[in-house]
Image (tube, rainbow, N blue to C red; front, side, top):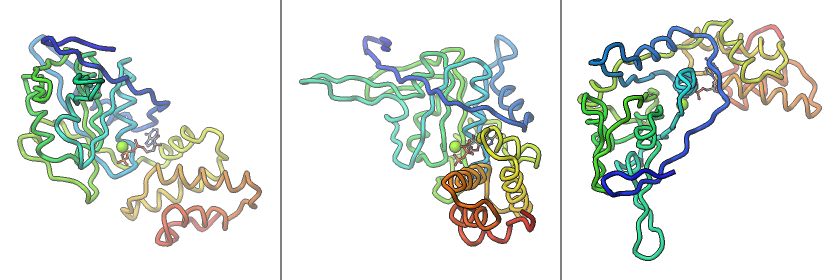
Length: 274
Ligand SMILES: Nc1ncnc2c1ncn2[C@@H]1O[C@H](COP(=O)(O)OP(=O)(O)OP(=O)(O)O)[C@@H](O)[C@H]1O
Ligand SMILES: [Mg+2]
């Protein structure tokens, strides 16, 4: 798939297809969809930011919301090494003395009217963020220095950034902060929702194990521990594999799966009953 802009041929990225479904916590879903709405010809969509601890479902929510709108989703995974050209257009050598210009998932979404998830945006340096400033305000365009072109976003283009609060991150500069609004905070789910999340991700899972792991997670949440649905899914998955492989199901098996997933510190949240 290619697009010509100002005489430059751009090769576009493919949309991402993930088998995910959002379970429970409808309020944050509603807020995200509302932020993307355009309510008047003079209105503009917002550029929301999803915040929360690792594994609470930020990427899942962003993807599921985009799919509810029936749109193509382009995920750009940000890292500390993400350079401005990685966000926009990268030149790739193609044969003798020829360059091919490859559009990032972000620029592909801008051109196709898709939705871009700028995943773990907090890992990215200020220099990279600076190249997105005009996109995130009323201008809605980016300028690629490498290709020497200006790219305007399709009216249906939407973007969401996800960010977690771990240590390997940069503080966002204020002018970017103010362009990535609103902030939507994803918190740990209620017990019945957390059970449903485990069930959704492990539909073949034994309810007894899933309930036990849910109790474990809820005790950890009550103590403000950073264990998430992702950890719970890993624990339950490992227990089921061990049991399938012949290990005898019981407290010791679940206990060792918890320790092997989260370490000895996790023992204090293990429910008493099994
Ligand atoms: N509400 C939910 N509905 C369905 N699945 C969920 C939900 N919340 C979390 N999950 C599951 O938990 C796991 C972690 O979710 P996800 O990867 O979206 O978290 P994250 O917040 O993006 O984490 P990170 O900060 O590490 O990127 C996934 O397997 C996802 O399917
Ligand atoms: Mg994520």
